[in-house]
Image (cartoon, rainbow, N blue to C red; front, side, top):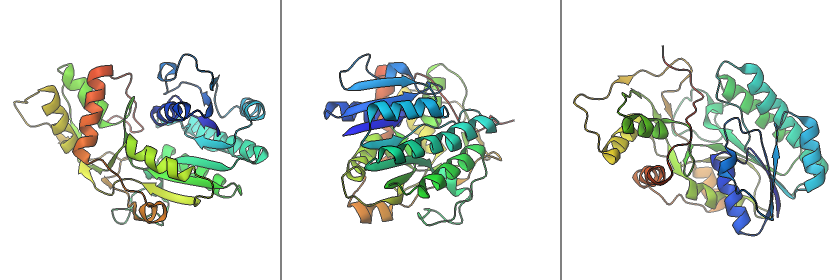
Length: 310
């Protein structure tokens, strides 16, 4: 395969890049390194080309497609780190997605895989959230990502859009796990939001991606998750035990902010039935594997799509 990966220096993109290079596929990465890191990719590899720039730059995207001639596209690029920068979210997540989709049409790609966020569901009526639940995003990130998915759906491309749970693996730089790990190691205070999330191991994500990229595999929209929810306090307790911190008083727990969702757990049953896929790692195994990676490599950076609490 000749695989073009947007956002290829992020957690998911860089992990997939490594996987496909080992399998002797050709990979082209487009990344502006706003949240991804150049060090997450090999310095040089005969099958890897890295293009520095944003998917919002139509000329750059068109040149990359024309020169590389991809057979497959994985659209992982996303803007999310400033909840108030609606313009940047729109440029990247909507206009950038349109640029990538249009270039993929011209290239007649065999598969187009889009990474979406569970936040596209907004505040769901029930959890776990089925894949046919209505899209009701209410944050800039969720709204713009949902719009991007909608444009892909109308493109006529052979596409798969994955509504993702919290994928946890090497180089993870967003969410409570790196936050708690870094702060507790530094002796700093923490708090937990009273929220529930589902976490899935990167290796389990890889296995479903392998099935999705097969020629003739089903298209459409799918949830990728374990289907089980866990509180942020459960994350904190596992991290605190791992780093050997015993608090004199319980960690403060706060109500979710106006831009947050109390419970977001995705129902993967349609994905499991369609692809014959099953998550392998338990919640505890997933978190411990992540913490072991931080012990060896450290935390590069921490980002969040949420506003800081007042």
